Structure formats: structure tokens, C-alpha cells
Length: 264
Length: 246
Figure 1: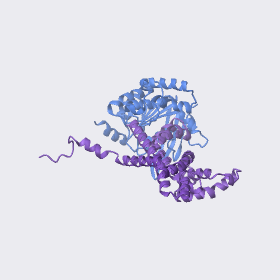
Figure 2: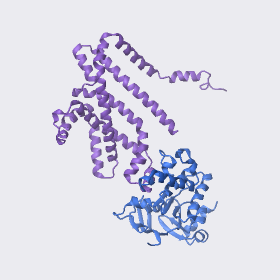
Figure 3: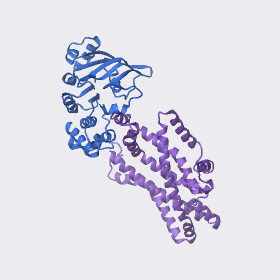
Figure 4: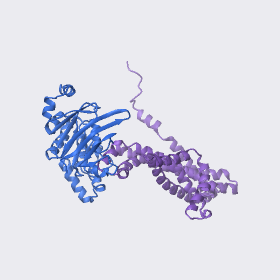
């Protein structure tokens, strides 16, 4: 008796590729293309785009700068998190848990208006000259530093203990072993997770519009408020974020596949 | 300078409430090859790992070339640079090429130039018989080749002592010989070696003394001839009868 043919029918590969085809990506690209046409052809959309688009420089600058600082903070806090020194470890855990327990929007206000004044005071800078943009970058960096710390910690802990033992047995110090042996492997392992957090941060950068930073979100709000073109303003804004994040996440998938193959 | 390069004095090690090593005393002379055998869980690896301070003894003392390892003033990294170690799981650095594996510690610890480190590294790769793999990555090598690179990596530091922690236990049977051959050659060249292994053939051929450990204690220390053929203790006889039957 032969059972029903589930596998290996002649057209199964065709059916399979039909099922596996990334239709979601087509849908998103159709949306992006339609928006592109609207922006070119429709004056109201065109005006909104022209008003909002310059803000992309602020959005990208804020995100990239804040992410670079967050990487340093995250690495330090992640190393502190696994330190054998009780004081260092507890300071790191306090920072991480404090940030994780408060909403991002609230933290942006708190960092910008509560944390920055005493820091600028300590550095001898007049608090009033610290621009909203700088405050926004500091706020995002402090917030994402705590998230990245947990990624770094997990990455370091994913490297087998034997690596540290081998490095130490050769006479390398703890710091040398971390720098030359553990971290290069850990960072490679966590690079997809770091990429995901960069995309998350790009989206969260919209929150800094509450500090009146002239990013694309703030410009969209201004345009909507002055022209009452809410649909055009927010559709263009959505289009801009989606275009950026979809490109970044496609790049990230491609990179993940590449390092996956490298390992295999 | 005393003739004993390793002195282990009344070593105790607890893991939680379990006493893994009980009152172990052992001295190793310069150029001597000592093999430690015993059932798994007998504490032999723990003793070995105390010799380069990868395990910190609960009490007792270890002296390497007269330097007290448990002394807070001791720079342990300096001592470790003189004590090479080969692990059961090789522990090569997978993100570095074979040549980088054998040069990184030379450069960062011995502060040698790139050229000098690579020259010494290549010498040691020839020593273990795989200079042609210098630019390969560890994952491209067989287990036996990986372990030989690990030996070369330790030798490139030009250590005074080599420690081997079950170096052939993770290898496929056909690869054991190539690693043991390198170790035998090293023993003939006069390297001071402490080897934890189940390879009794190697112990017979290379060891000046064999240490039998059981249940955290040293039961018997003797030449391989005496220990294998005329063991004095019941526990040694029982262990040998179990492993030599087949």
C-alpha cells in the first residue's frame, strides 16, 4: 500500500517556493512605491515631504551618535555586570535595572532635565547652552547603554570558559584575554542583536521630538499643525521610517546569513 | 635554585562541601616527566590546574621554581608564562589563524615583535609537524592537528614546564598516536612535564614516575614498572585490573 504522496511530487519545489516567497516584503515595497508616486505626483504629499525630509539628517545623526556612545556604555556596563568586584558589579546592575524599569519616554525627560544639569554643572558648562539635540543624544545613549549591556553580557557568557582559561594559562592578563580572545568572538556572535537594537534606536529616536529636536517626527508634527494636512504628514513620516528600517533589516539578514555560512 | 621545579605541599581543594583534593604532596624535578593516573573524579585534573593557579587551592601551597603561587604578592601571569598547558578540549582561539594562535601570547605577554613571534611560532609548528597549516583556521583542522597546534601554542612561550590535562581524551582513536608522538618527543628533549592521562602506554614509555590518585588522595607514587607490574596498594591493583583487562 502506498500512502498519500506528501513529498517529492514534481511540482513540490514550485509549490514550496510559492509558499516560502516573501510576500510580506512585496506588500511593504508596494506601499513604499505607492507613497513614492504620491510624493512625486501629489502637491500636498510633495509639500509634506519637502518639509519633513531635511529632518532625516537630525534623525540619523542623533541615532548614530547616541548608538556609538551606547556601545561604549553598554560594553562597560556589561563587563561590570560580570565583574568579580562586588561594588563594580552592583553599580552596573543598578544602572541596568534602573533603566529597564522606567519607560523610554519618561527617561528622555528625566535624563534631559534631571541628569544633564548636574553633569554640565560638574563639567563647568552652563546648562542652558546644552542644546536639546545634545540632551536627546545623551538620553538615548544612557537608555540604550543599559539594553546593550545585557547583550554584551550574554555575548561574553556565550564564549566557552576554556577560551579564558587557555588565554590566562598563556600568561595573558584578564584584560588582555578579554580584549584579544573573548570580545572579538563575543562581538561577532552578538552583531545581529546589536544591529536589531540599532534599528530599534532609530525608531525610538522619534521620541526625542518631545524635546523639540527637529527630527523627522518633530517636523511632521509641525507641518501637520500648520497645514492641517495630518494624513499627508504622517503617511510621509511613516514612509520615511519604514524605508530606513526595511533597508537596514534586509542588510542585517544578509549579514547574518553571511556569518552563518562562514561558521558552517 | 632547588632541583624541585614544582613543589605541591599539603594541597586541599573543596568544591562547595565536596573535598576534591585531600592533602596532596608532590615534587617534580627539572626535566622529569610525571604522569598522574586514576579513575575520573579522583582529583587529578584539579591538582594539575592548581599548578598554574587555574584552580585556587582551599589550603596548602604550590611553588613553581621557588615562587609561592598563593602569595598575594606573586604576579601569577609571570608564572603562567613559564608553565604551558594543553587542555582536553584543545581550546584553540577559533577567530585566529593557526599562526596567530601561536603568536598572540608571545606578542602580548613576551612583548616580542611580530617577526620574531612568527619565526618562533613557525619553528614550533614544524616541531609538532604541521607548518603547512599556519594560515588555516582551527575549525579546518582535525582534532589531532588542533591538539598539536595547542601544544605548539604553549611551546612558543618557551615554558619551563608543560602541563597536559587529558590531551587525548577528546580525540578519535586514529588521532591519538600523532599527539602522543609529539609528547614523547618533547619528553625525550628533556621538558619537565606533568601529564594527566589514561594512556598507560605513554606512561610506561615516557614517565619517570607515575602517580596513582583515587578519591582526592595520592595513593601511590612509583616508577611505571613498579606501579603497573607490582602495585603495592589494593586500590591501585583494582584500578589497573579494570583498565588493563581489555
